[in-house]
Image (tube, rainbow, N blue to C red):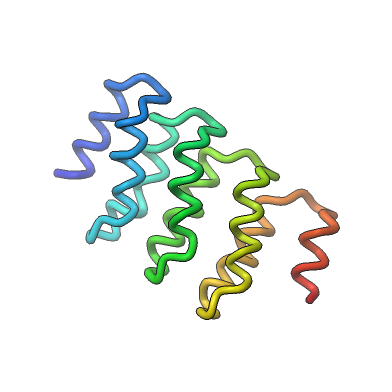
Length: 128
């Protein structure tokens, strides 16, 4: 039912609707992994590319202890954040300090997806 409601919501609201963005991003914390993983698909219908509210909400979930929440957040960021977005890149970089090695590993993979080839800062961080 939740996914059906998200699908319907994404067709009836205008892009940029703050309530819709919050409703969709909150599904990243849903107990059903299918709902979490489909969040990006619906988020790209309710949030504009580069939407700061949506990106901030997703960035806040990058250090979540649940790997599925982190993965869904990265996938959703890929839908709405432009490559090289400093907020996203810095969030991935901050994950390199996390105690959980899985979070650090996810951050390294994700960072590579969000920077341009040859990015000196990313190369230095990944070599270290």
